[in-house]
Image (cartoon, rainbow over all chains, first blue to last red; front, side):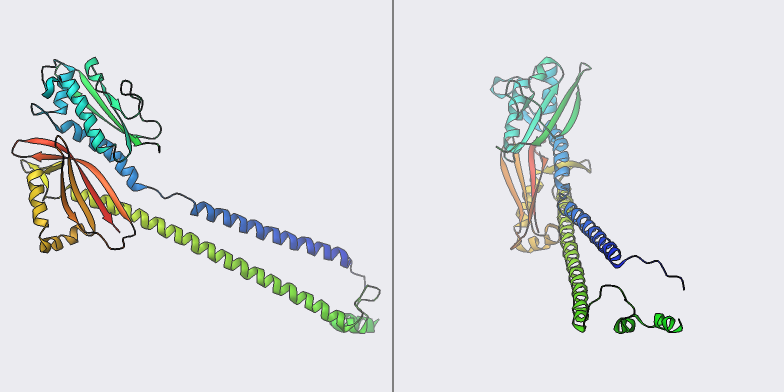
Length: 180
Length: 192
């Protein structure tokens, strides 16, 4: 009978050892991949639905509510005061202030009572004739030259038509203040 | 030849005992060596089984940890959605809303209705009737401008609450006598 060709025991043992090590390596690789996946899933931050909704709604609702508020200056709303500020400035408010100054001061009071206590930063910009630009204010930068919110922010815009055919653009940005 | 052929067909261990299967090769010399080899192989099998069960236990613990994390995130998400829904429901309550020519005005509360509703809710029986709506929560309306005033509408805290979720939305407070609108905020805290 012809002799069958077989590998020597030593070679066979070496091959078997290599196969076992390969198997162990594959197991270790699979376990490592599984661990990485698990860590990725566990460490994924929770989606903050409430914060996203609240911040977006806050900017829109805040600006609309602010403009519709009765100012206390001859029963005009702030929307009407801004229109007067952009045109003739015939409205005289308590304390002898004109509509522009009164609106600016009142806005600052409202922001200090609402957004400041909850550590929200803001930037209210009023764009139009030069007189209304002085109402622009914010919690960043200086009182003379306020700056927009740095980083992530939510904003709302409201155009206000004036009698002269122009438009005042009011924009409110709300953001989180950096921790002190 | 026939004998060797017959021997070639016999089981390996018989050929080992007779010494013919491994003629010329290096062999263990006694029964003790066979035992040792068998023990080593048993040990290998046990080690593989131990590692196998260890891996299974490891995998299961990871699976439960991930499931627990997912469940708690889902619970938080549900709680947040519940808080948003609840706040929107309060903001459109007919007991508080402003109505202009039978049309409900958005984000507006009537200050007289609010005050009256606050008084009504001080009655314990009526407060219990509204538990189905308000649940465990705190509902406060704060007038900010031009004057400052607070209306504590409803407050029922949950004992040992694990979470409290506050939500604030700005609203208008209408004074129907003067037809003026004050700036206010609705603060709703939901307990869970």
